[in-house]
Amino acid sequence: MATFRLAPHLRPVLHSRLEEARARTDALFECLPPNSFYDRPIPERHRLIFYLGHLEAFDWNLFAPALGLQSRDADFDKLFAFGIDPVGEGLPTDMPGDWPNIARVEKYNRQVREALDEGLSGAEGLRSTAPEIADGTLLHVAIEHRLMHAETLAYLLHNLPVARKISQGGTFADPRPAPKPRAVTILAGIATLGQSRDLPQVFGWDNEFGAQEIHVPRFSVDAFPVTNDEFLKFVRAGGYQDASLWKPEDWEWRHRERLEHPHFWVPRSSSLATDPDTQWEYRAMFGAIPLPMSWPVYVSHAEASAFARWSGKKLPTEAQWHRAAYAVPDGIERAYPWGDAAPDRSRGNFHHERWDATAVDAHPAGASAFGVFDLLGNGWEWTSTEFGPLPGFEAFSFYPGYSANFFDGKHFVMKGGSPRTDECMLRRSFRNWFQPHYPHVYATFRCVEE
Image (cartoon, rainbow, N blue to C red; front, side, top):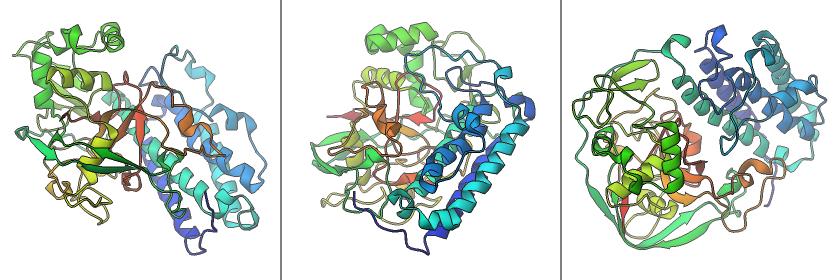
């Protein structure tokens, strides 16, 4: 990839964005009373104290070699370096006492920020010959990595009992009915995945390069993501009890986990999910509310795939999703579903505006040219495409495992964004991914027919 030196006036802009990202993650930790830092709200993940140190350790391990800085705490640099990808491994067995106290971690964070800020703005940053410093790539990586973890922290906090966190706002019922499901026809044409390496001034993660044009035949797609109302029909029809709807490995997982309904749902009046009289509640971030029928359902890829088979449809491929989101009938492609205007709150539920979802038809100004709603924000959307490299993939030299470690046939591409996704990651080329048996993230889906 061609490199260039970051324009002098842009360096303080990126520094300011890093400060803003730090403030955002700092605010999330303010949701935790001290005794909750050692909780593990999701069994497959680290305790929350890890994330307090991880963000600074990541930044240090990213910048220090390029800036020639010497570590002040090599043990913490290593302890907080890497998270866990919950695929096919045993659950972590560490105990709260295995982790340092909060004050030590906060001291480490302060020291790292001071050293990095001085290095980035001082002589080390100006003298550095590392191209990733000169062109701003490392600053972009640090910013977006932190904002990704702002979303990770949000769903980790969501899985904490309400009594174990400090409320940041009221929880309100949403009685609006779900819109009537309908399909939209998408004309045959080109979908462009990724972005070109000929535009070095545009940041992207390594899996976003290079651009790939795919011809997509005509198909139809749900105008809205599948709502809680629609998914309730699947639950009541016995979808969780019908092995024929599930891949063998998905059925084994469902059976092992004794899964009977979506992770965010709670049955109140009956123990039988299939009982039509069962009253359902939704576990919102700071309290339970009656199941909001107009909100997108949050489920794993395995559950989404079973629903699609039950409905006689499929999950979209990554290329189909792109075509529905960005194409227009005359053949061009837009930067965003609604056009080229920058994202704002009228276009969707994203950029940390809400703790929870909203109705799938609440943002008509965000619809695509074909009339497909709710494509950015409100919930990442599962595709049927296994996560893999685009043509000419080159791993980041400073972070070789960021994408390549997950090109394993065990992860699926997700597109769109959630309520907690920062607007900088709403760019067309951005690709998220997760394994199919992980029900904790803000992930929804829509179906297609070919």
